[in-house]
Image 1 (cartoon, helix red, strand yellow):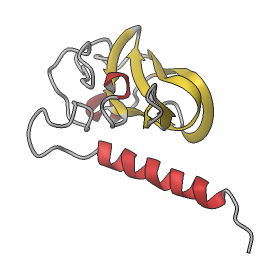
Image 2 (tube, rainbow, N blue to C red):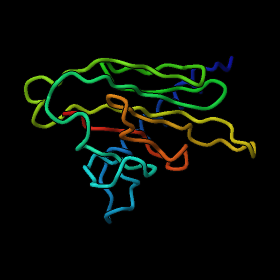
Image 3 (cartoon, one colour):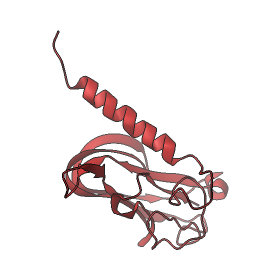
Length: 157
């Protein structure tokens, strides 16, 4: 029997999907989830892992949204912006789209998310890559430079 890389790719995809699902759940206690678990914290976006839903995306107009993953090498990235996709990319990587919430999205919001894969840290250990989301030039979500092992997410309204 011949061993192929398909099992590794499938396992990696499953792990990323699990990370995505874990990142979308709520935390048992306020402040224990880094602010990226789908709730709308009131913390300033300059704090790692926090998101701000009161800023530039308020009002339902078109917005320029940029998702970015930093690091070196290649990693798998799952993202939802103007479309949802999973791909292996060379870092640093970013994608920008102009998004205008429509219909119910104006009330409930539209989820923008980027789930970075792992990169090799300075100590040789694998760690989550750094991710950020920027709306109209203002950083609204990040994972603390990869220190918070959750996806970056933002509810665009």
